[in-house]
Amino acid sequence: MLYFNNFSNISYNFGDEPDPVIFQNISLYADIIDQIKDNITFANLHTIQEGFRPDQVSIQLYDTPLHYWTFYLLNDNLREQGWPLPNQELITYIQKSFPNTTITTRDSSLASKFKIGQTITGNTSGLSGKVIRRNLDLGQIVVEGNISFTSGGEIFTSTNSSDVEETLVSVSAEREYLSESHYVDGTGTIVDIDPEVGPGALLTGKTHQDVYHSVNESLRQIKVIKPDLINGIVTSFKKSLRG
Image (cartoon, rainbow, N blue to C red):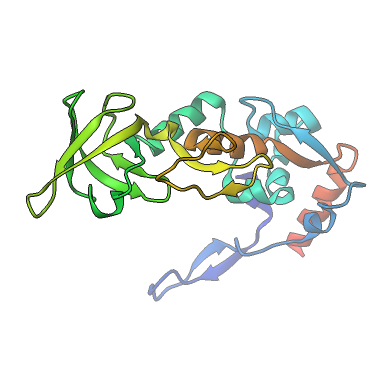
């Protein structure tokens, strides 16, 4: 990465190695950009277009791909969470991160049955799967894999470790990434629900896909150094590193 071209070399011992090696001092830091990132005199707001890479945004703004690294120093969320993904890549990532099936129930005794590791079977669909996770706050059971249970109202059975058969009725069964992560009220504040009653009409469910999409969209709004100031600030930053 060209960003590290101005980092000086040092003699460094890796781990328990007795002999040092020459390596770039990546611990160097200059606060030039930190000093100006909240000053509207130096920065503009910019929306990253769908599919644009950091080097492409740099070309778009500064007629060179070489200033891409300033976006990360200027925006803490980019540095911590990464560059926003194109929508199709995001969908693929979400589906890979949440590949299982979520069953939601209003059963009041869920806490004591359908434990992790049990195999459950839908009486209507005839399909089975292993419980790998539970969210008692939302009345959810996560079953391993993508299983096409009946979408709602299916009776599920499972035999526990004491050889006792357990049953529950589902409210819904859907792909995990399309199941609720949490609920919000009219102001967008996350609120708890009674899992035995459900969210009611005044609350809105936010799926895992909704959450990831919202975060990804928020990453598109970034601060950038004004084009007429970029060269001077970059020069000062590199001099500070070398100094």
